[in-house]
Length: 298
Image (cartoon, rainbow, N blue to C red):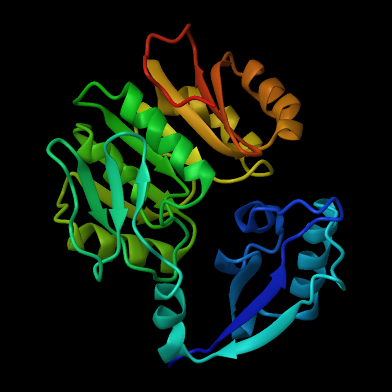
């Protein structure tokens, strides 16, 4: 049965007069039911399934706005119903191709190919899964992969969303990738993207969590989630990473660092490098000093 959606729009200007990235606001929401966001001319649009929208979700949004010194009343919050049949059209109107790093281009199917020799191109149309390549946290991890993969790695992508990081890793030379997400809708979308981009058995996408066990060990682990969830991942990293493996944790801000660093130190891991874009951080994590080169920078 089709389900309608709720679109909540608001202005993203803080009291200081500076604009705030809508993705940053999305990352602070605690409900976990929001589907994604886009921004146009300083107005953010965040979507929920109609059945998941509630007064509590609105209160959660107002708290997130307050964290960025955005007055919720002045922001002009507007709530509108979006019929299921209009979902893709609403997203499509906001998206154009985006480049990640030096060689990676993400485009939608209605835009023509434009990949130079040696470039990597993925086709990701807007659906109900987070991860279309526009957010700084995704870009940081993709650039880290571009700078560090040497070929033949086994990769784990925690909180895979659209599967974009798993697909990028494979196109960069990884031999296999496992993407896990606790959202069945996201995993189904990721599987559709994988088929559309010609991936096969080398890419496994499954519903699950990082503490589910039975996954084996990996040369590379990437996790683009959020600062509240990442500390829970840290205790399990030693059993997921091969002895000389490396992880890239993203979705963090400066205030998250003390908790993350303490959680890593408690299991014998350390931050080997950090990368920043706008307000967002990505951390390279491992057991030994980094031997990887060319990773993403500020």
